Amino acid sequence: MARVYTFSAGPSMLPEEVLKIAAGEMLDYHGCGQSVMEMSHRSKVFDEIIKTAETLLRELMNIPDNYKVLFLQGGASAQFSAIPLNFMNGSGKADYIITGQWAKKAYQEAQKYGSVRAVASSADKTFSYIPKTTREDFDPEADYVYICMNNTIYGTVYHELPDTGDIPLIADISSCFLSEPLDVSRFAMLYGGAQKNVAPAGLVIAIIREDMLGKARDITPTMMNYQIMAENNSLYNTPPCYTIYICKLVLDWIKSIGGLSAMRERNVRKAELLYNYLDSSKLFRGTVVPEDRSLMNVPFVTDSDDLNAKFVKEAEKEGFVNLKGHRTVGGMRASIYNAMPYEGVEKLVAFMKKFEEENL
Ligand SMILES: *Cc1c(COP(=O)(O)O)cnc(C)c1O
Image (cartoon, rainbow, N blue to C red; front, top):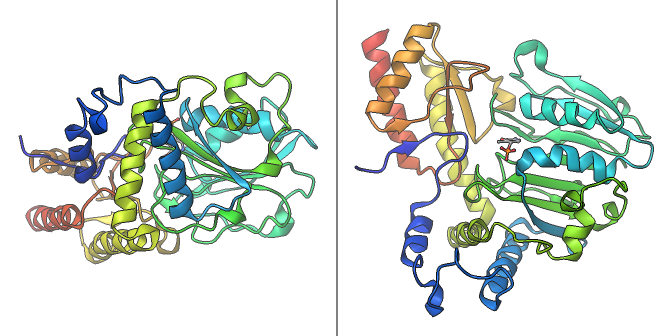
């Protein structure tokens, strides 16, 4: 079967170049006579893989030296508890902005550990926009402010960061990781699950400013203690070795196309093609206010549930898969992460035009 275009929100497409390299190296990695899946995580060969991955990530994201890079497990969702356990230890207070389901889950989890406030929310309009905040909205005593940078389900993104003054800012960047340049120094911590834009499932990458470390509560599970993970260079226990290896290949690929500025250009070009069509269509429309639109996740609808279902079904037959919107919002969603080629979006738009002509 020919490869389909998968618009899945995650796990999602990986660059074909990367899959081919991985296939070629499957049985014998660089002449060592074994697969990366089979080798010890303490071996010299694997040590080079994880170190190279970190070096490449630091280079691509321009990560300052006073930040640690951690390769973790448990999914982005495990960090919803790890973050309060590690950081909510001054005043025991934290401020969250609720921009969708992932932010809300993080907020609810944090409530188990301290006094947590929802500073702003866009729930009133099905999370179709990013609520505006000013520095005065935040509690100066808060141990941190938490945001979800790109809202995978609803298709919004922070184009401008909230001004939190001196309060450490923490962001979940799962669905916009490495999609465009980001000023790491604005954050106390960035983290994301790798399965959207960086690697297969099983890996979380956290980037943490060093002064944030060493304050974890005594009850923090060892596996969730960022300080311990940092002291052990992410090798406290067995890391997800093969996923880290694919991550390294993806980072090589991003570097080869020119880094994050080039990545952004590609992503803008793809997203504009789709948004421009949605804005001109008489059948489909985007659901997010134009100023907060994500480059990665593009939700859209027709005015009929039946037509939505018909579209998803017919698209699948044509090789455009996973276009169904999240179960909590319905409609459609095209996730067009880094690995989605321009051609994939171009063909999807051509198919949508045809569907519009036939069904209007
Ligand atoms: C997918 C996603 C998550 C959840 O990731 P898991 O690794 O499945 O826990 C959290 N936040 C955002 C923004 C996501 O897109």
